[in-house]
Length: 430
Image (cartoon, rainbow, N blue to C red):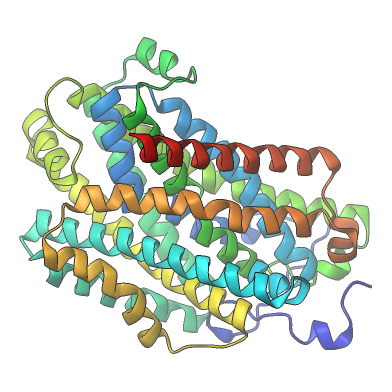
């Protein structure tokens, strides 16, 4: 038995504090009712930061960085699968396990960087929502930022009714984003030869490296590595008990992997569609990939409806990702410090930098891109502890990673760290 009775009592109830009805994880049980947590996490993979980096990448370099989106999405599938498994196997989230297993100074350092990541995340989500409200209704950017923050609280209210209502709302907004870019992609078309060439790894100078780093940070979001591990405990019933048998583990892992595959695959298609549309319509036109320019360019080339659809998709992205980001901040604070800060107070703290950017009149798209670069630097601080914990049998029991899985994960971490170091050198000398 891997949890004591005292530990078992700490198994978190799901969103909103209500116990989750158990789902017996027997082989052959229908998987569809078990899907949901990965779709909440997937919203963070199509947040306004993705809009900024993907459209900037496509407008500036055509299809060159398409391979970065594909590679980042494959990385995200593995990482989100591991963090979901960690929650199922232990009944705890990643931040809590770090606090329990690591020295206090290390835990404090991880918490501080996680808070920095939360601020960068909030900046992207609030600025994105504000820009969408400005494009659609002419709302001043600072006012739009406040409206986006309020909308996040409204969406979080669905948690009080259990995990299902919240998951349905977030998944619904995710599909709004997907439908929007499906519509736009049909209008723009695809250069098949260009897309195929874009799948071959290459760069086009230092600026493309900055955008590649931003795309990676926007896709493999550090805060959802924490939040996904908090969404799965209790979600699949008594996973610890069911996981003692090979058949029970296979059933649970099948449900969890299908959840991740569908959610992350859908998010990856949306990201690829953004870059393809930008590459098709804006390469060589002088459009710089800013959200305002993209909105106007879509209207000019595909009709006013395309611009409206873009604005609606951006608004849905800002609202949905902002609520998930708020929940992630609560998970990080409670896990690392074992303290709960009122949501309103915490939101005001992380909201301040985003509102300052809007009040000072800084370019929203530039702020979005650099916020995603900051997120990329935060990935290893969540990924390395995740790999360390999931590779330990004393933590995971029979759920422990295979050596191949750990090796692949370590390779991903090394690649991201190397990319970050290379970017630092480029920025320093350039």
